[in-house]
Image 1 (spheres, rainbow, N blue to C red):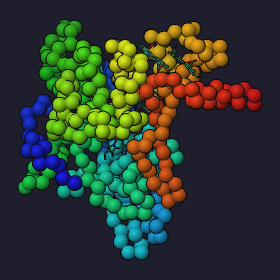
Image 2 (spheres, rainbow, N blue to C red):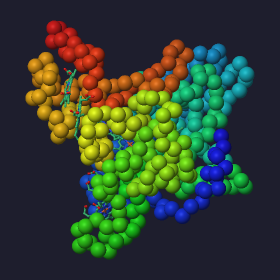
Image 3 (cartoon, rainbow, N blue to C red):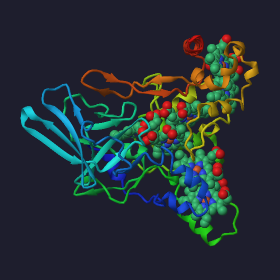
Image 4 (cartoon, rainbow, N blue to C red):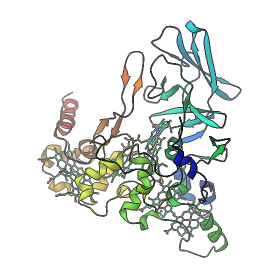
Length: 381
Ligand code: HEC
Ligand code: HEC
Ligand code: HEC
Ligand code: HEC
Ligand code: HEC
Ligand code: HEC
Ligand code: HEC
C-alpha cells in the first residue's frame, strides 16, 4: 500500500517528540502510574514477550487448520522468540515469520506484526480471547496464506504512542525510535518541559507546562478520545501529528453524511454518544463523566452510579417492575452489548462476531424485556 503523495511531502515536521515514558512521571504521580500501567490503553501494543503474547504455543493448541486442503498455520516458540508458519502442502510452500510486535491488550484478542525492510506487516493468524484459540486475522479469508499486509501508520496511531516515519530512497519506512502502548503524553502532550520544571521546583504545587484535558472546552476534550474512538477517518495531515488541544477535524476528515448512518459499536463510541439524548441535553457531558482512564474499570454497577449524577431512579417509570435490579441491570438495559459489523473473522465453519457496549444511551424496549425475562427464568429455577 502507498500513502497519498501529499502526505509523504509533509512527513518531516517539527513536532514535540512524545518520548517521556510513563516511568518519567512516577516520581510525582506514583498512584496514577501504578494503576495506568494496568490498563488496556497502556497494554494495547508491546514488544513480543512471553508476557505480552497471549496465544497458546503448547502442542495440541498451536495449530490453526483451515477449510482448504493442506493449508494450515503453526505457532512455535523457539529460544524465547515466537514464530508463525503458514503451510500450503499442495503447492509445497511454507513461510515463517517472527512475531515482533503485539497489538491488542488481549481483552478481546490480539494481532501480531513482524518487521521487514523497515516496515511492519500483519501476521495472518490472530488470537481470540473469548475462545482462547488462534483464528484467521480479522478480514483475512480462510485458507489464504498472506504475509504481505502492510501495517499503515493509522493503525499504529491508534494503538501506540509514537512512531517516526522517514523516507529512504523514496520509500516510506518506520524508524526504530518508536514508543509502543498508549502512554501519558498521547492525551497530555509532550511532558518534557513539565518534568524538567517540577524536578527543579519541588515546592511548586500548581502543575505547569502540561495539558490537563479537564481545562479544555468539551469539543477539544472529546477530540482527544476521538483520535481513536470515532471510527475510520481519512487523514488530512500526516499520522502522528495531532496533539491534544488541537481541533481533530483539521487532521482527519470529519465523519460525513455519506457514511453508514449508524456508527459502529467497535471503535466509534464518540459517534454513538453524540446521538444520545443524555449528551445532546447536557453541555458538560464528556467521556470523563463516566470514565477515569487512569485505572482499569470493569465494574458495570459502578458505571450505573455515574448515571445518578443526572437521573433519579425513584422517578423511573418501571421502578416497580425492576425492583432491586435497578443498579445491576441499568447499563445492560440502556447501553446494551451490540454486534459489530466492522470486524469480520472467518473460520472454516462460521463467521465470528464481536459484541461491544453501545454508547447510544437510550431506551431499548426489546432488550429491557429480555433482561427482565432472564431474571424470571432464574428466579423460577
Ligand atoms: C518532579 C515532579 C513531577 C513529575 C516528574 C511529573 N509531574 Fe505532573 N505534576 C507535578 C505537580 C507538582 C503537579 C501539580 C499538582 C498535581 O496536580 O498533582 C502536576 C500536575 C500534573 C497535571 C495536571 C496539570 C493541571 O493543569 O491540572 C498533569 C496532567 C500532569 N502533571 C502530568 C504529568 C505527566 C504526564 C508526567 C510525566 C511525563 C508528569 N506529570 C511528571 C509534578 C510532576
Ligand atoms: C481509528 C483507530 C483505530 C485503528 C486505525 C485501528 N484500531 Fe484496533 N482498536 C481501536 C479501538 C478503539 C479498540 C478497542 C475499543 C473498541 O473496539 O471499540 C481497538 C481494538 C483492537 C484489538 C482488540 C484489543 C483487545 O484486546 O480487545 C485489536 C487486536 C486491534 N484493535 C488491532 C488493530 C490492528 C492490527 C489495526 C491496524 C491494522 C487496528 N487495530 C487499527 C482503534 C483502532
Ligand atoms: C487516554 C488519555 C489519557 C492518558 C493516556 C492519561 N491521561 Fe491523565 N488525564 C486524562 C484526562 C481526560 C484527564 C482529565 C480528567 C477530568 O476531566 O477530570 C486527565 C487528568 C490527569 C491529571 C490531573 C489530575 C487528575 O487526577 O485528574 C494528572 C496528574 C494526569 N492526568 C496524569 C497522567 C499520567 C501521569 C498519565 C500516565 C501514567 C496519564 N495521565 C495518562 C487523560 C489521560
Ligand atoms: C491513541 C488512541 C487512543 C486514544 C487517544 C484514546 N483511546 Fe481509548 N482505547 C484505544 C484502544 C486501541 C483501546 C483498546 C485497547 C486494547 O484493549 O488493546 C482503547 C480502549 C478504551 C477503553 C476500554 C478499556 C478497557 O479496559 O477495555 C476505554 C473505556 C477507553 N478506551 C476510553 C478512552 C477515553 C475516555 C479516551 C479519551 C480521554 C481515550 N480512550 C483515548 C485507543 C485510544
Ligand atoms: C451529565 C448528565 C447525564 C448523565 C451522566 C446521564 N444522563 Fe441520561 N440523560 C440526561 C439528560 C439531560 C437527558 C434528557 C432528558 C430529557 O430530555 O428529558 C437524558 C436522557 C436519558 C434517557 C432517555 C433517552 C431517550 O432517548 O429518551 C435515558 C434512558 C438515559 N438518559 C439513561 C442514562 C443512563 C443509563 C446513564 C448512565 C449510564 C445516563 N443516562 C447518564 C443526562 C445525563
Ligand atoms: C454515561 C456513561 C458513559 C460515558 C459518558 C462514556 N462511556 Fe464508555 N463505557 C460506559 C460503560 C457503562 C461501559 C461498559 C463497561 C464494561 O462493560 O466494562 C463503557 C465502555 C467503554 C469502552 C469499552 C467498550 C467495549 O465494549 O469494550 C470504550 C472503548 C469506551 N467506553 C469509550 C468511551 C469514550 C471514548 C467515551 C466518550 C466519547 C465514553 N466511553 C463515554 C459508560 C460511558
Ligand atoms: C430492566 C431494564 C431497565 C433498567 C434496569 C433500567 N431501565 Fe431505565 N428504562 C427502561 C425502559 C424500558 C424505559 C422506558 C420506560 C417507558 O417509557 O415507559 C426506561 C426509561 C428510562 C429513562 C427515561 C425516562 C423518561 O422519563 O423518559 C431514564 C432517564 C432511565 N430509564 C434511566 C435509568 C437509569 C439511570 C437506570 C439505572 C440506574 C435505569 N434506567 C435502569 C429500562 C430499564
